[in-house]
Length: 252
Picture 1 (tube, helix red, strand yellow):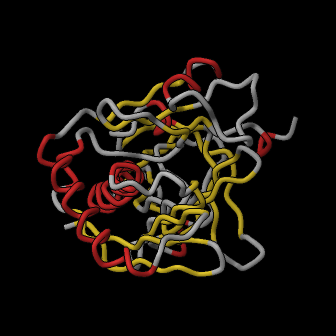
Picture 2 (cartoon, one colour):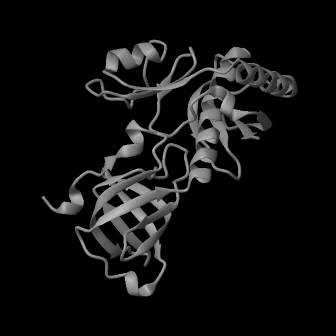
């Protein structure tokens, strides 16, 4: 098997709060768009995906420092895109031991935004929008939103926006542990209220995130330790279009 086809061990998957690690450098090359890429055997960097932006940070040893600007996961391999601090460092040694360091402030912001999206899902149910089905959730800094299949009456938007914010404030003030479980399919289904999305294979062991005592959902992202770390969730707007409802939000 080619070394570049060895799946990257995802250290953040088991420990979301680990920001530094060591690894072995497997490959260094230029991508098709002329960006430098490093592949290591294990990583603490969360790649872009599931609505969560990628981590940033650095990969280094005594010979070089590589600034990680973007991270992507493809076919179970994590690609770290970025640039070397010095052009003389570009010929790095394959097999070298390297240190990985994640930008803590960016990780925490992304984790708060991501967790706030899960909290918003709970609030949507609690204010009576039970007919809305999960769509896609995106948690980018410039406009995070959660998308749902289904629409709500226009005359409810203003009042429900206020209700969502009040419910979020109530849940944040109460707090609650955010837990991660990697469990067999049947147990995962139980943790998620009795069912899982169709894309989850029945012979798999899904990773489930739960906020407090509320039903969980499958998720591969990073999260906060307690609901109260979100601080404040504000609903900036609600859009209804082509059978979908998008609830935009931000955290403070």
